[in-house]
Figure (cartoon, rainbow over the protein chains, first blue to last red):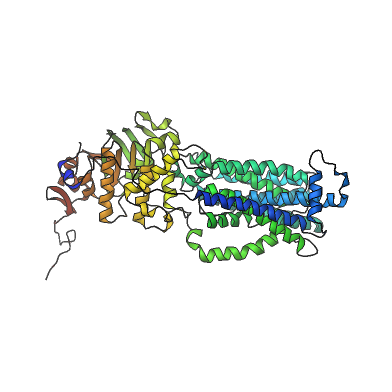
Length: 366
Length: 268
């Protein structure tokens, strides 16, 4: 034994190894959390059904069932009412799917950004996606000859903004979190100024179009949009969920993540890239929808705890449900449609005040 | 186990480490002792590859750390950082489970039994099983240090590096942590821990490295390292080494000079 005589006197060293088997069992409440997620799926389907029935044109569950059944292979669809077909298949179903997909994507991206930036007050637009997309969309509205496709323009400028943030904050092969956030503030304000220039120099019709686009809405949802969003969101959420334990480790800080066996730089790049793609696709399809990406990860964390293995799927389900509820309210509350950001903000603001008043301790740390 | 040679490091023009040489054998409990700003944490961060090393090599178990991935590093060396805050309200058992990350597969939706047992064992080894379900962000600084030590134990690595593991602990817990480190060393883990307290390294370590202004000035057994001359070279006349029951004890000096450096004078 390499113990000095003096140390021997003070230290009573047990010779047997520590008795691991005698240690009290540690239980992780996984079953309860899994049940919660299953309930979330059921709730989402239920809300989807309500959204299908709600609207200016009243339609019965049986008619909805008939239209959907007619889509199955081997079923003759010619017997269904063409109006029902249009309302259910061409208008409401793609819109419901879009609402769910956008809500899912924004909430997951928000949860991921919050984990990566170690700050529960971060939202998916922190790195400039929304400002970049607004500029791209405004440019497409003003100069259709330059950018013929609004969605593509918004998407391209959203990615450009985030790329500017990522590369301008890079020093010595690393992206410190403070640098990313500061660069995000700079790029956001730069693109907002550019949007203001475009607004200032546009005529009334174009100005109206820009303002409406920025407020966001699911009015023009079509199967073509669903075809773009469905693969991006499902693959993105699956990848993020697969890496969710590593997100826990990453949220302890770069240095600790490294000593726990996770390469923080590579992981941050994957998370930021994936969350940015999901946000950019959502924003370029439906405009800027506020609050979902900030609130839903929070709500998920309050219900299931901070473990991202559960926060990510729960945020996705709750984001989809929340946006579906808000969109249904937006199109049924009044005779005309209310832009959805107005609804999500009016519902979200009191919640955020509540959070500020009760959870200040960890809402501002990190 | 750990071999450091010719290690230099500086933040810009400010040189922090100036040619560190050290070699630790397996199963050693080595104390790194030095005053504030002597470069203890920087040395650890160079060993853990948290800082780029412009000059010199660090190798663990014969492998140069420059060629090891984060995952390979984490299976070789566990790190207990100085006390820190978590932005999210993780539970203690979740924090300790993070120590299992380098041994886990990529997915992890079902925690393997071996990892659960390692977590339970690590909590038990530090004596904080009753804190398993507590929120980490609501613990005291000392309790957090115990959790971080527990996480490092759960990582089950041949080398463990601890940065001031007892700085926020009460006296009882300080002795508890050092005893746990002794036990880990006896079981074969190489432990490198730094401390501001010369008594801790004198009482509990097999070997002591004394770091002063970026250089290792003394390297030897506690008897050889914590001596009157070492303490005097670091702290001038502020302290002196005494003996109580055969143990060396560093106490405030009685050098006088108006008593401003000595213990509180109890007059009249």
